Length: 275
Image (tube, rainbow, N blue to C red; front, side, top):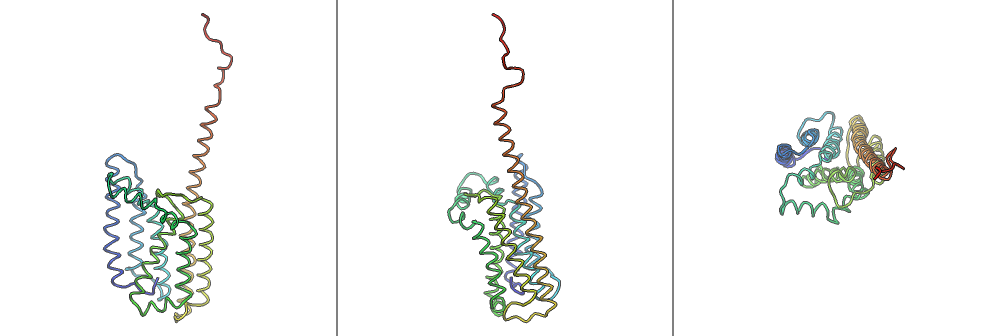
């Protein structure tokens, strides 16, 4: 994220997030009216993601320039994307849309080979965390202060990269291939470690070409470090919930198979009625 949002970025965020959140809620209401189940917590998560995104770009953020930059990174690139993803928007769209071209197009996009490899967890992590390292450990952040077009591109990249990484780790929506839980958990652990190392390095040395005050730099690094940990815990809980549900389903299937092969007690050797 750059040091300050552009007016154009703020305008687009407000104009896009509002209708998208309203569309999600209306689609969920339509689904419930026809008798389908859709938890209200997903509506709350999606709207909260929109609020986090808009607040990160438009709202007041505490501290100096770098602390505000770190808080905006936390809201726009981490918290907002995670809240969007756990709300399962693609699943909702596929359930509410009638059969037709738009629905088929969404299915083709979700099942395409490009989406499959883009959502390969190590690739998504490299795009997200690698981009953060490039932003903070090169002159890119400094250059963005003087180039509004570059600043807007970087803001958009961090949001899209955060969405990509959160989707690749959670994978709650229907895709062509679900990568293994162990691969996603390992990727989350390594990405979290890389994010923490970056935050600690910023606590000691600011991005090249910048001149943030020491207390501002250190406070911003702490916001990035501890806030990143909090968001990663949410992702870890999502994985733990998935593991728990999958384990329960496997046990139920094993119990059903063993029950089919078991002879009911008292039936063995029982003679039929005499003729």
